[in-house]
Length: 380
Image 1: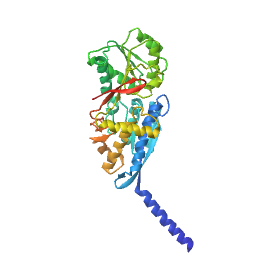
Image 2 (image 1 turned 30 degrees about the vertical axis):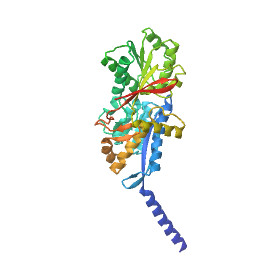
Image 3 (image 1 turned 90 degrees about the horizontal axis):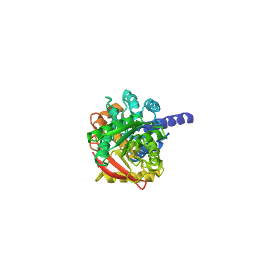
């Protein structure tokens, strides 16, 4: 009799326990970035932005469709490599994630986006700027930063009008991002009435640029534009100094990190570099960004590299759409996400156009002085 009673009590406890567990809604958010390789510092920065958002959401106790949500971060490393990127994407699809934040690079984001689209999983990139990403006709692709048309074009005009560049040369790393932003920079230069006098290319793993730079030195450039990432830009700046090339060095968001002075091994002259970050805040919004940076530093004992705040906002925007839709099911919250408008994030106000691009995206122009990044201007 006692045995039977124990079984009944155990069964009731199991049932109650099971019911309590069923009331919790587990929401899986995937994040992908290069947390290994030459730009691992950027990938880790992004991942930390996602982790901060997830931890805050869990601490807050978010309810979706009447159920308390428990958010889980599924973080994958794509090494900045397209093949590894699609493998990481497939892993997240197989894990049935509710949404994806990433990837960091355009070269990994674009091929991965097809897998997410085929699976109907919403994807928000916090940093991929190649225009092609949101122009493939997929309804699942979004980004929270301005694209290369805006970024490259703005830098091209700045090189002619503000830097007074007369002899402008262009180098790119042949990646989807590097080549894309370099193409748009050239268009911007021409639109501003300037002209480029040479175009060279390298790759995203290169460390020796002697041949390219020696060839360019003969042209006496006053502006060198580089389409690529900081891990390549740093050694390139160092070798420019060794060869006596005193040109301004201009680049997009890929070089615009707090790590660049270290990568250039102390050869960065004050105001030599001008770079643009896709995104930017001014006025009242600046306080929320400053607060985020302070909170990030306290939590991770590291400065924000570039995109952690945009990853944080992308995660929050995705969850806000789930809450509003009353569901974390991709098919149900996707239309709500697409209709996002006027969301107040730490990076400014977020809304998406019909392609999934951010509306009225800002750019921030920076330079470096005394080994520290300094803001020049926010432009739209």
